[in-house]
Image (cartoon, rainbow, N blue to C red; front, side, top):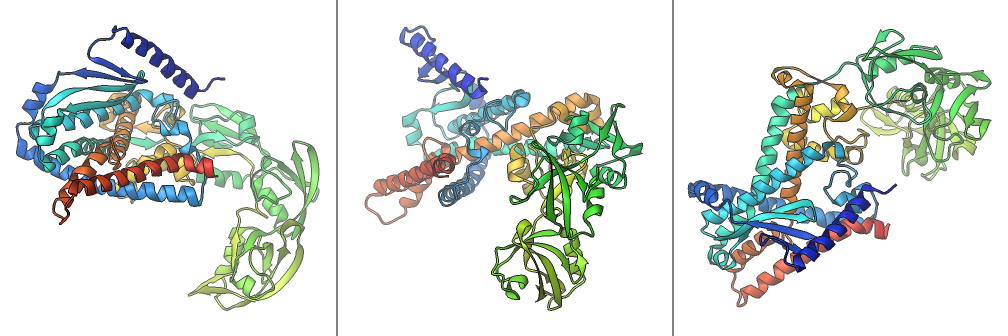
Length: 589
């Protein structure tokens, strides 16, 4: 199947050939100019409006000065961020979906994090961003008496990538450095202002009108899980389990944990019901485990089990257990030490009091005679001890094929917090099991970030940052596990609308929320990118004018050469940094 990226690339190539052929034959209007795949559309319209709008010049100059300060701060931050990211890409190259070539392009359907389902909102946000950005340049041109040669729109073939205001070169050079700097900073200032306005509306009245629907929002089901076999799909909302209402995932887990039946009836919010036959599925396993992810444990020491709680009860008193495992190649039996899977820390209490040097694997089966089946057990045992207490620790050193050993050690720690000196893995012997297999969608977390349900304890800047990373939250906020593209598709089933915005209906409110979210997001990206101190971006021009201003005050004979050296060096470093940041992890990894 041909990917969207190849389709878009082929379309751009075809457009380029056709447009260049028409241009060479003189068949394009004078307002349309073609340079390879880049098409620019020029116009003289709008100048009279800009002249009228620029009349309160003192206000716009004050606005421009504010923008210069903001742009300088973002420029310095961008330089530091790119330099740090490039250094990390060289020292520790870690390829990720974020630096895939297609994900550098903000094109819905091509970028993995920008789905086609929100393409109208993304395009609307992009158009708004381009208009206010270039409109800001045009407005400050007139405020600073800089003539405008033309204005227009720039396209990569048929894809809008920018708008432009083309100042008259000689008129611009006649303007003061301060006037030029304000003009170059005006675009990003407007982008940031639009982003702030949209976030204020989204975080306030719009998200405040949205609530999380009662029940368990199903983001999906685990491969091979009982939930998937029963047909529980994305977008479903679980309202009850075996006739007991469940308001959230915690209540559902409590009902399942207290139920020992193999089959449970799941009631969905739409009134339908599903029968789910439970079995113990391994969802996470340490690398050396004899049981793999997506395999099923059907019995412990010959006794059949079908629930996670039944599995935990069956192994609770056994330092070693025979697990009957069903996998892709049939059924087999694995003999497994049962305890807390741990890695011995260097210079920790366990390594300091024994022949262990740190780095060894140890499945801890008991401490002071008390069983430690998993992390919670180990924590509970240590909570009852003090630093300096002497305890016996029994476990299998070397992991699943290791030898059983017992040590007498002195616990470390400070205050009243005793520590053993190990790094513990989740689950029983490093195995995390699930007898249901629903992947819960973090509907409440996303809504809280956007200001709904009271907004939690998040500050404005923190919320803006989290909103900015929501489209790739699964990478930047691993505990979330999902990306947020807006209130679209099956996700809308997880939310309700109330209050005055209820007059718009759920569809209208979600559309408004999506438009505000993506407009704010796109404008932040446009503003930040244009602040990168490299030509031909606004940041490169601001760097030049501010450097000229500083150099003019220095006792140097050739200020122009010094200015050129500074701006060229910074621009080259930034461009190389961006290239290394994007391509370095894959070339060096």
